[in-house]
Length: 457
Image (tube, rainbow, N blue to C red; front, side, top):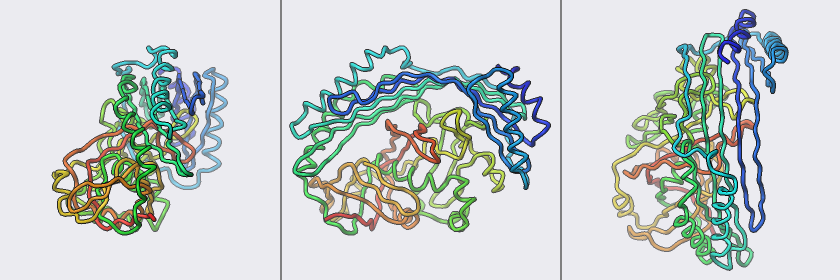
């Protein structure tokens, strides 16, 4: 494959400033239950590729499904022609080392070794656990995905990377309903190396079912301003959705207002706050050796001791901003161009114990897990469940807890970071620019945030 792809690059590279080709073969299994019914059952395979050409700052793209010589010649010519039509400026791609690597699959238990019948039986069992847990749980949502990919990348600079990857994700949701209200509690799982994450989720699922029912009878929180303790799951979703997306290079480059705010060296938090993004956590969905531009993965510091020190880049955004590429140029699959995307986005571990975090809070909220929301500079997140904190103790369960505020004002109010750092994989993924769901992970310890606005009754 290497010599074949390189022959096309050699033929057309002289006509542009840069040229690359990605080829991908994939196999996918998707299973879903909605109540008693099978909502989704699909096994599929695909093969295709993507050509990028850049000339005087203008890109040309072409996606294809055949590797025969005539097809590739046609699409290389098309991408080069597009680049010449659009190129009117200067090509600015950050330089990267030339690499040649073959990366075989690193796997503990390959999901392809597990029969479809076995996968169905496991998910049916979880689904029945939900549907028989309580009369007030009339329906469920159970999902599972596994994907195997064999990928090739060749560039006009001489890089060549061949890699095999797997991705596994899923979610188990109990949907409790009573008197016109609905409460949902979920268990998620994911891995880039081991099918066994699908197993042994019964204990967590029993608790999710119990919590969904308990939330039906729980009082709604009274709206107001509270000190909030966010558990690692909610804090991880917060750092991904709000600060992670805000740190993606093209957003800063293209938005002058945001660029003014996101100046390197600006203080965004106290000394206890450190945020980074990494592809170096093996086994998690956000791990990768190289991004889809052939840039080696790394740990990228974003905030260090409260001060902004970096952002997430593709080669183009790094080149345009005069910064270093970070290995964040990622594409969902061969149909898309790489763009700056997160991998595993983390609030770093702190030194404060949970007990020390809550002991001086007279009235606050302990927010656990996340049921979704909106990130960005103005954020809004709904906790999966929450408990009142009264006089330094965790007390009654409350519902309808939605945290909102301005990202930058909130970061400065994080005044304690826990010693219980955890990485979490969910069954979903990250969405951006029609590329969904891209495998990512999020991580954080428990954090304390002062003066958070919570909507409620």
